[in-house]
Image (tube, rainbow, N blue to C red; front, side, top):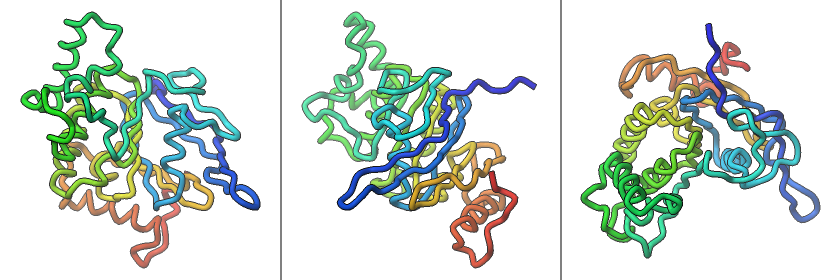
Length: 260
């Protein structure tokens, strides 16, 4: 059987930040692999280093030890092959949706730039809002515009740092479905940070569970159910319970079956 090509390889990454009287170890000896086209979640409590790990993978932060490779090449600085989406959208308030999505497409001729931007605006369902400015959009629409901007430059890897955390439940569910639809169509590799167990189970091919102080990956759980997933199904609740066990939130001991 042919092994899938790897998009992301993290090899023994550690990271500390200086503090008064010493330094605080944020990440310790983290290794992981993500195949091309895979959607993998990093799940853990606040402060476990999830966002720091994404920043290291994206080349925004240098590790103290270890190496990151994207598509087989060492990753040491940000580039167009890997983009990061944050919780707070990052849209430029003085630019319309279309002009925001055109960011990063300046090398293209004007007609091609506009056609590309509009194609991705249509993909996220904002065609009628292309001329609107960010303050005229709901939070969910702003996040869709940010996703269109990221997709427009055709990155190989998308890093998503709790992108739906600030949204209400119904908008979050809608955008989770939109993300899965776009992922099926465009097939980017996605590494998705969340602290929401249901979100991790609903979206992911695999869930990597982190613990804090310092941040380490202690378990990997493959979600082996087909999409679309039913949040009320027995299979969904089975995986939800497995993850809850890892955080000792069910009154039972974590299963050794899922140790890496």
